[in-house]
Amino acid sequence: MIKPSTLLFVAAVALSAGFAIVAAVRDDRPGYTFFKPLTTLIILLGAAWLVQPGDQPYRGLVVAALALSVAGDLLLALPADRLLPGLLAFLLAHVAYIAAFSVDAPFAPRQLPWLVPWVVVTGGVVAFTWRGLGRHRVPVLGYVAVVCVMAWRAAMRGQAAVPRASYGLALLGAGLFVASDMVLAIRRFRHPSRVTHGLELGAYWTAQTLIALSIGA
Image (tube, rainbow, N blue to C red; front, side):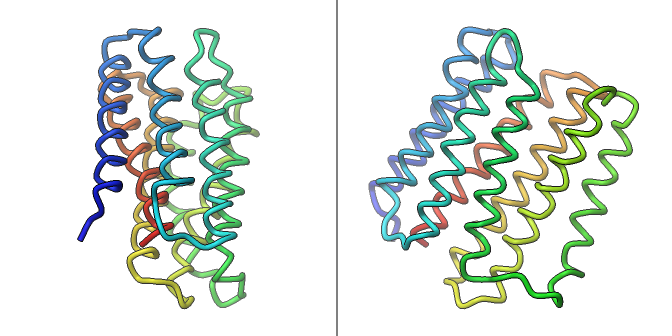
């Protein structure tokens, strides 16, 4: 049975995310600047206190990743968009997620083939947006590489003795995070669109919420 606190957490995220998405589609900069980091902050607070139970260090690393994501959201939502600092904040967030997903499933050479599908998908998007990347090519390539590893490590948790629900939630969240980042790349560097911006944000917050919920699953 789903706990009332979990329902409250998910409802709060959905409400704030809805306001943020509407603001993004309407090009309401003040609303977007307020609700974008607020939504991720709600997920952070839920992961830190509402989602129970949760073992360290997994919870601590997920909370750290969410804190870095809040910083990244602030940087990317500001009127003077700080793309490179924002990318750095999210890159560090993914490093924290890599550490979290590797707690129960340390690296082993036999796991490497499972990295290939993620490289193919993200590599295709990078190739599609390559011309538009311009001076951002090197940082974007570095970021995409870290995102690939993050999703791969989430998939490898299935080989460890972790609860199936926790594994499934984290893997689905990681996959949606990759999808969100790939839509972001296409929107910024190939085909700007307010509609795809809404899809990107919806996938992003769903991903973060699922990973937060994996703490207590």
